[in-house]
Amino acid sequence: MSEEKSDSKIVRGPADWRGSVQVTRSFLPELDDYVARLREVWETGQLTNHGPLVTRLEEQLRDYLDVEHLYAICNGTVALQIAIEALEFRGDVITTPFSYVATTSSLVWQHCRPVFADIDRETMAIDPAAIEAAITPETTGILATHVYGFPCDIDAIGAVAEKHGLKVIYDAAHCFGARFRGRGMMRYGDAAISSFHATKVFHCGEGGAVTVSDPELAERVAYMRNFGHKGREDFYGIGINGKLSELHAAMGLAVFEHVGEIIAARRIVVEDYWRRLDGVDGVRILQPGPEVDWNYAYLPVILPDESAVETVRDRLAEENIYPRRYFFPPLHRLPGLEPGPSLPVAEEMAGRVMCLPVFPGIEESVVEKVAAEVARVVAC
Ligand SMILES: *Cc1c(COP(=O)(O)O)cnc(C)c1O
Image (tube, rainbow, N blue to C red; front, side, top):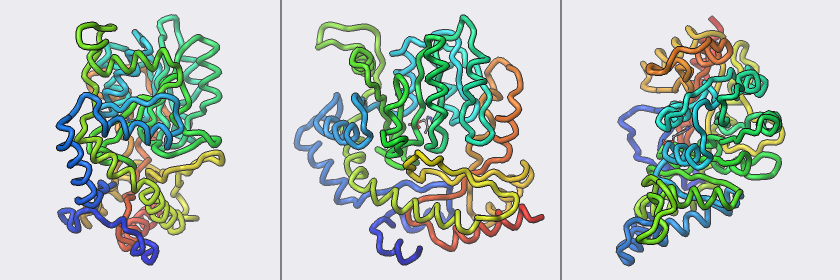
């Protein structure tokens, strides 16, 4: 592992991350590469409003992600809000309790009511049978997350949606570069969103995208992200400011050049953890299914109970290493939501799951320490 890593040009973050190891570390391109793109911005004088850098980034991403229509957005949360608005989700929307908070908060911000369906214990994704059981005449849509970049049960969700005449948005924020049955993961569903936040596999510092295949829906997304403008003096309808700036696109273009390397470097780290934790009693490693070409975005493990998770967290904190409880708390327990029924699988699994630190250039000694600590705690 160390040999392959030292061959890689990838170790490019700040050398001293305040002495601590977080669950991830942002990839930084060579400063000169970034400056070369910024120089283009200085040459055009155009800082935003869909300039040449955003246009180029969109073209590159559309090809790479294997989608029909892709719109760069200022972040993944606004991308979710635009997708929700473009598909006219109103009232009740069925969603997953096991995701990042933005999956739920974007619904609430759009004045939709999140109706939570429990997750599948094996995949941690929303359970299609629970979706169907939650459907009422008030239901207007389904918002599901491909957690950790593993696809939801796309066939079953598609069948439920079709049977009840509902549209599906996939939160594909974890899926950058991942494929399912040979197709880009963002091709599935009526719309999908991505996040290009600094902590993601690919990033613009801040950024995101909406992808759709239907051309009419594509038009709605396009005007909605730009205030609803139709030229200078006319409007299609009401929109929002969801634009990505040229300055963020400059970062995106510089990072995009390295996406292959980034995923390859993550894979080395993830496989190293797998080897070290393989066969350790009491540790379940979540892995992608057979039809998935994965992006090695996360290293999720399920421990025997919540106290094991807390013990690992506290012991590693003493070493200045900070895995994250992705995702805890389960989202139906967020403060500010009306209390709903309990969701036993999501509640149990959110208590038992932990994501271990993975990023290009992580020291092998850290991986060794983390894996050893996990093994030690579950052996007790
Ligand atoms: C990161 C993330 C988001 C939010 O994206 P931002 O770009 O940070 O707004 C939404 N959903 C999931 C599942 C995420 O991981």
